[in-house]
Each structure stands twice: as structure tokens, then as C-alpha cells.
Image 1: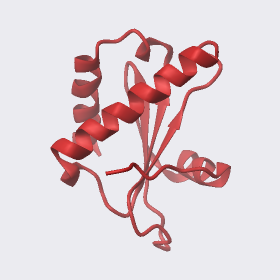
Image 2: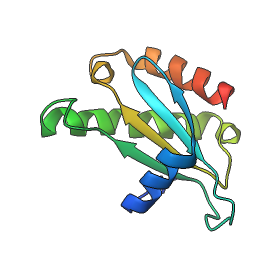
Image 3: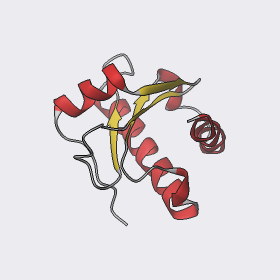
Length: 113
């Protein structure tokens, strides 16, 4: 299954303003459910700012977040709300963190939402 991603800045800004945020050691997870239900399917957004490092490090962080989401979608898609958007914002420690730790943190975040 291909992951549907957010492309427009407007969607990221709406999620930042009105979405629920869960802060973690390696990333921040934002969940936004629009009230007018314009989104009919699950979408994801991935952000890595220049604080992470150069382009190589930012791309690696986004690849790791995408693979994390794809693992969770394959294992248990019911953890995600079908009409919501989820945005993952990378922190600097995400690049060197073991993938198992990322999975544990993601599961904790999804249980909190």
C-alpha cells in the first residue's frame, strides 16, 4: 500500500495550529481531524528541518519516518483514524536511534491519541 502524503503547506499549518501534539524523544507526532471532513482517507506528512543537519541527514530522517509508518500500516492499520492526517516532525536524535526504539515510541504515541 502506497502512503498518501501531504504536499501543501496549508495542510501542515492547519495541523500545527489545531492538531493534537504528542512530544517524544525522537519525533513529534501531530494528529489533525478536519471538521468539514474534506479528507476521505488517511494521509501522512513528514518534516525534517535544517536543525537536523544537511540534506543527506534530513532525507535519511524522512526515509526512517516513512518506513516506520509503513511498518505500522502493515502490522495494524486500525491504530490510525481513516479521516485524519498525521504529521511526524523529526528531532536530531532520530537519525541515530535504533529502529526498535522508534517503533516503541510510535506505539506509545498512537496509544495516547
